[in-house]
Image 1 (spheres, one colour):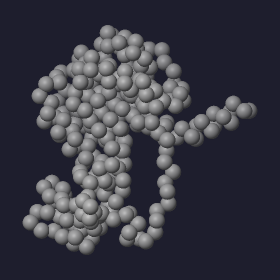
Image 2: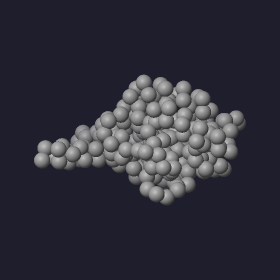
Image 3: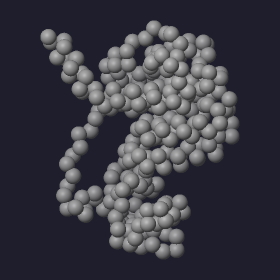
Image 4: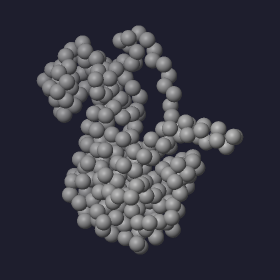
Length: 267
């Protein structure tokens, strides 16, 4: 069963009361009945198992139990990958493309999405309240669908100046900044960049038309490393997923390729 994400912590008696869209999803879509169980994530990311206690007048009441409560077996401790958070710095694209980018980023385990307005962006930072609420809803739906344990967050759109103020704070924590750019800039391999064991990986992706020469220079002056993957020009919504997936896979397999690297060095 797909995971469900609770918006609030349970009460002292470990019960939760779910209504509105959550109620309709669990009762109408999943067709849960009293006495049944469903897996869920608490707001802090901890796993729990919810037993349905009652369904009445548009409210589902459940009790949070430890995951092993039904099977009686304590699940083995999973070996957690020491993977740094991946932050997507996404220049605002046209229309509803940002919705797709947000959904794919949440499914792909991106930690944070930072939309910003660049020179070639059509969208502006004003009147972003509805968009921001929609993005939060999309993230929840995507995490429930995909089972991602990463608590993906999204920020309201920033200006370019605000973006670099935010980047300075990330950089202080040992962040690696990668600038995805289709023009021919001298670069190292992605493996080489990620070999530095960064505390955070920040990926900057432009809108339709990419970044201007001035913006590219600004990113490089602020410590970003140029990155090109392949020799084709990708759509902005494709580039975000494509590059983030490449970074995540390399980080997930880091222990493996580091081990091969050591063996080759010792030969």
